[in-house]
Image 1 (cartoon, rainbow, N blue to C red):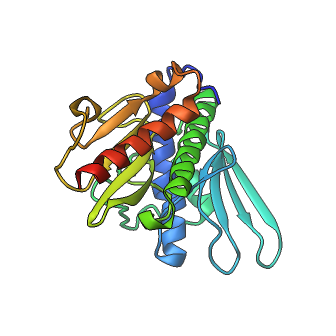
Image 2 (image 1 turned 180 degrees about the horizontal axis):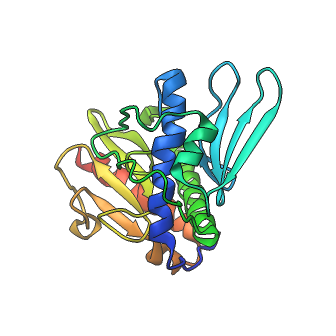
Image 3 (image 1 turned 135 degrees about the horizontal axis):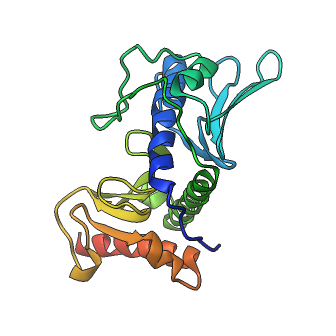
Length: 244
């Protein structure tokens, strides 16, 4: 799978979509189930099916989609290129005035009456990255097997990254993930984040304060980005396992 150059509007669209992820999708799932983890879905990200109506709230490209298949089959959509966060909340039936947090770094609601201004090309690029990262995590989890006692891969709205944790060795766990970009890096990246301070093996591998990263542009330069992603994540796990 090839990774294209990111549009200049990616950072602004990422910030807008994270507000939707937290304050619309995660809020809605949490109100019904008490859980707020999200998933990669076709064209973007969304909730798993939840509640008595088998509800799914998701973002597909620049659109918010709400589907319910419990009693009667029903779909509603909203164009996030021109819609506000308030309108998105109305579609999902969430109250932005109520306190909600998905972790210590939950982004603020902001002005809910200002247009989100999601760019379609940037939304598509972020969806491609999320699908790429999710596939890499799934592949590595499958290769490591049940001995690694993996958690469930989820998109955590607090940081807007896909992540999973696995056992690298007895008593030593590590986070593996795919971030669309954040305060650490403007561009997307894969990461290996050990739970402890040990960084065994090749010092050049551990190139971030929290562990190791492989940046989007580095992956774009690879002949086989999927294979490079898998190799990076597995190398981190194995270095930690060998040093445990």
